[in-house]
Image (spheres, rainbow, N blue to C red):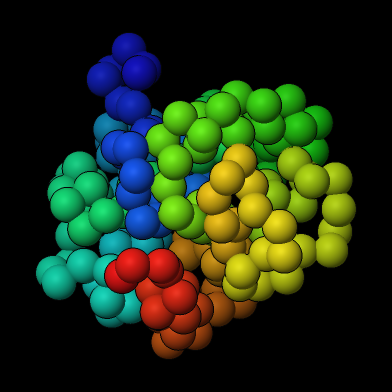
Length: 172
């Protein structure tokens, strides 16, 4: 937990899905809530894809647990842009990240974007969707990043990708 009370983890044991960002945004750390930027599409996409029955806001992030979902990041250091995190920082974070996932045992770890998983696995060969190997005992899945900076995916494309995950989660 940071000095301002911000803890980027919204976790509980045995969740269906943990959405995993690269690292917390500086704005999230300042605001005290994940995905708090007005341009970030995370909260509307979760609702439109059927993970929540109402559109949550960043300040409602702890309610996500009641839907069997959580939030974490591979690297805990907040930055203005994810580009500030280098491949070596991802590889250095891998052991503690995997230990955290083993401790919480989510069914699926859904990486928001390919970059963190690619760096942790030291490979460029990462596709969208379910990965061929598990990570720390959980299904690994790669989703497009909902950041407002990622305009390579329309809102509809994001919703389809997240809905595909929702449909594939065991027990949902």
